[in-house]
Image (cartoon, rainbow, N blue to C red; front, top):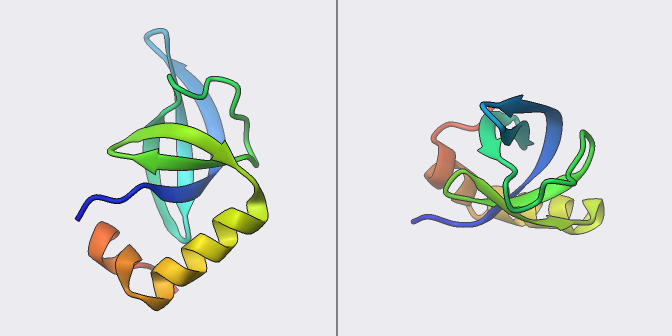
Length: 84
């Protein structure tokens, strides 16, 4: 299954003219393209689908969604073993 998962932007960089970010998904960190949400900054929450941030969202919504995904085992299905 391939979901859109919320994560918190940890850092932002420019890679060959493309805005990129390191994003934390409840303990799993991934590199994500910010081309569709270039205004995202460290501390912001974004929804990520197949390596692209597609929308920003508020912290409470992101935390609730991550908690629900974790409870349902969706994070492990999406990312493999999730650190506790």
